[in-house]
Amino acid sequence: MMIPTDRFDDALSYASRLHRAQLRKGTRIPCVPHLLTVAANVADCTDSRVEPKPPWRARKAAYLEGLHHKPARSLLVSLANKTHNARAILGDRRQVGEAIWDRFTGGRDGTLWYYAGLAQAFRMLLPGPLADELDATVRAMAA
Image (cartoon, rainbow, N blue to C red; front, top):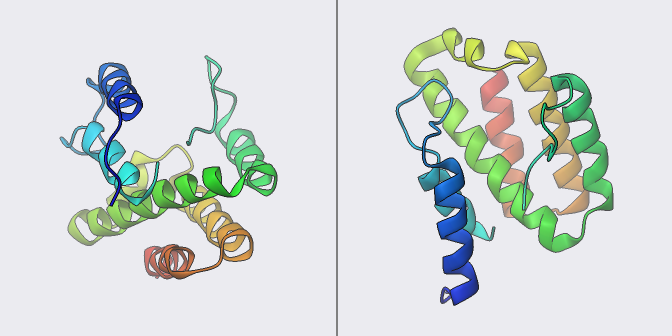
């Protein structure tokens, strides 16, 4: 069990201020609990630090390629983040059906392409139970 440090508290406070007005795609669920869930699995993820963001497909392709150059610590954080996102997408899909894909810039095909790429990369770069869970969740999303 991780005991939060002052550094963690500062990061949480910063993230809360930064994301307090944001909601999870297509829901009324705030983003901050997502950040805590990711942190609970071990928390370093974004596909772009520039504004305006580059085009979606190019940004996601660059993120997938960049995974091969990240340290293991960052990979674990990214895997925890993406697994939580995939679980949320799958859960929402079960509730709202195919309309779920309207929430995403990449639509159904682009979103599934991206998550399949993530699952493949993590199975290779960070094999283990969490990578297996992401893979299974992505397969269920596509079914």
